[in-house]
Length: 276
Image 1 (cartoon, one colour):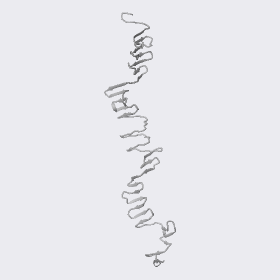
Image 2: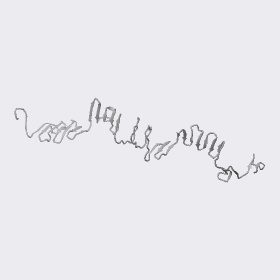
Image 3: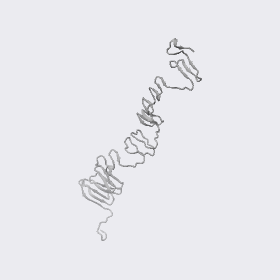
Image 4: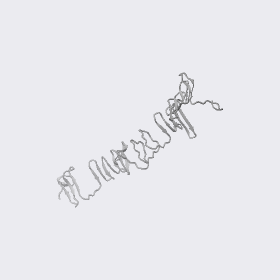
């Protein structure tokens, strides 16, 4: 004892007290630092351990350990850390069912499988996903590089199909080389349908497998038969026999008429032959 103030003063000391069932002291004090302070439970769980390099706190059951010197917090089971303020609450609960981490309930939470749910998020950097859906509006200022985009409506901006990309499939698709496939549609008022060709809005002009027609006075069927109320030829008119044979009827650009056969009036009998 030194001076008038009560106390114990020593250069080196060791104090051990309250031995547990394993014959280890419940409380240890050691001036050499091995340890400076150690507190054990009756079951020999070290609740506090202070040395030159450690400052550890542990729960009586040993499931939570806080290493202050190394800045680590370790929990084996039954760990629940929560905090609340005027902004809301944060919960980290090892005993939680599907979502051990949550902020303000369901507004932000993370599942055991790594799934993230958020009512509002501003994510910067790279996002990689194997699937999912967007029910609202996706505003892309850069490049959206992806595989299959379903149920999308593009408002404004430019759709650039790069690489070997294709927009759409099945009944409609557009490739990066500008080609497109459509089984049915309307382009500038013209109707296009697979197997039915195309026609204008009223159907008076059409091109299809059965032929083509322009109004009510001109048509060509699939066999090549021509129906027209009148015709004007700028050069010459040639009619061939048997599609590729000799010319049987020809009117040249000067108006000369050439006929390789005979001309009859009424029937092809010899009495009805017209001689020139």
